[in-house]
Image (tube, rainbow, N blue to C red; front, side, top):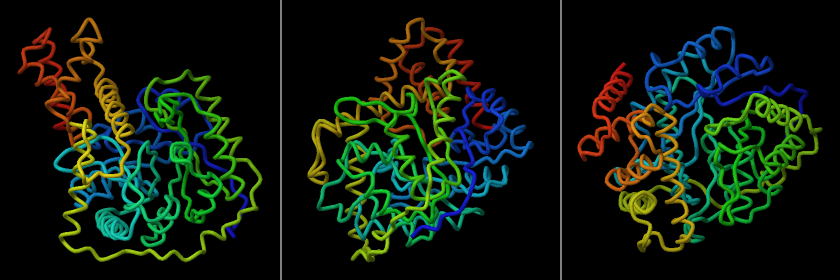
Amino acid sequence: MVAVASIETKLGLGYRSELALFVERRQDLGFVEILAEDFPHPAHIPAALKRLSRQGMTVIPHSTTLSLGSVQPPVAAQLKHLDALARYFDAPFVSDHIAFVRGGGLETGHLLPVQRNGKMLSVLKRNIEHAREGLSVPLVLENIATTFDWSDTQNEITEPEFLRLVLDSTDSGLLLDVSNLFANSFNHHLSEDAYLRALPLDKLRYVHVAGGTFKQGLYHDTHCHPLKEESLRVLKKLAALVPIPMVMLERDDNFASDIELSVELDQLRQSCAAPGGKAAAESRHIELDLGPIPIAQQELSTLASEQDALVQALLADCSHLPGTLAGLDQERVAQAFQALRRKRIRTIKRAYPDILALFQEEEKLNQLLERYFDSNPSVSELGPYDDAMKFVKYLKKSGELPSPKVAGALSQLLKSFLSN
């Protein structure tokens, strides 16, 4: 049974510059979470966020680029950057995902599912231990949302069982995204209740909730739509099983009004107030015949080629899946290809909205971004600001700049920002 204690849930919000004033005005927020990739250097931390930290607001750095599920270990520079943010804000921990984001020299800018087998468990264990060596605070791990998955021959157990094995074998805390849980339960026909009861909820550190949308028969966790009742339903189920120490709302784009955001935060607080104490965690004590399996170099190469092929399909060519991706749903991979392009367009515009000043028609900008992606399928490993600067350079080289002087000034500003 999960021990039940009387606690008050801390309410939080994903910090974005567009929400800075709202965060200051909302008096009952106990923490904010920042995207590590939004701050290439501590010198770029805005005054409003510094002020919140000085006033005692807990700030949690959250990463999306460690790629803990990749064959290659996490990049030392990224670990150093994440740890610098943790030290700057005196954070209790940092977080990232059980996923991979790169392969074959390409960066996806998106979290991809890992295969659920003993070999991948071994890779994750190695990479998480490696990451911990470069961090001065604990690393908390999050479940991701997916619209497609690896084949049954590559996935030996269910997603919640695999999450439990990863957390138990690495002694890691859990960041449970209940919206991601709903997305996967809907997209892959899983039981929400069975999923929750298979998790080691005693390892729960905090919870994410975000909005999304139904499209083409799938649920997409967009972070730019209003909260869905389905996510709140899962949150209430979780609250009935275990006290929730911290819960936060994620909103990355298409920002709602202050009133709408307040309503959604109030909904989170109310959902976490569900009576606890009926946790039935027996499934978590069932021994699974799966553990880390030593991997030979040839097997690592095979895994790397599978990941490389998936990244290539999602970023460059989804028209034909190679044999290494046999069993994946061709249609869903194609949908993901289009979704990643739309996401990259939004991310570049959000990172540097002044790019919009180059064009009278936004549709023209979108067309040029699509063309840029064809020749530059990888997002920049340095983040969206660098991606935007490279796009401006691409326009200059291709002769597509409507205003070279303005573009040159923007490029210089971006370069100066990244070099500080």
